[in-house]
Length: 164
Image (cartoon, rainbow, N blue to C red; front, top):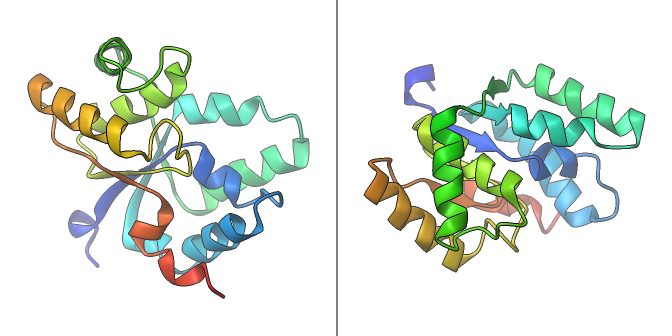
């Protein structure tokens, strides 16, 4: 697939972290198989917010492995711009994302202000959930940003790996 035709997919911290998370074996398997077989079909992005969260991981080997995965998969790193902070604040003030979870809001805002097509997350509590998604879409449209597709890796080709 030509680079310009690829879906621009933002990965929040939960995606590369799941690759090495043995506490959720099915999620880990889906993530590993997705990176192995599907990741090259997308133009992949992550952010400085995710890098900061990865840097907080206490397990040094896991942290190094996640960093290497980012490099190996040529995942581009996006900055947390002033526009993204403003949009994230809007998400939180309008109740799309709880004020207690600013990083979740930053992930979505960074993807939105950079006009990415989609965001993948394993965070079903604050991101991959119908009410936050509806509010995010509404806010993005009012702010002049496109609607961003939000889902777990399963909707980006990973669904076939959950039953291996």
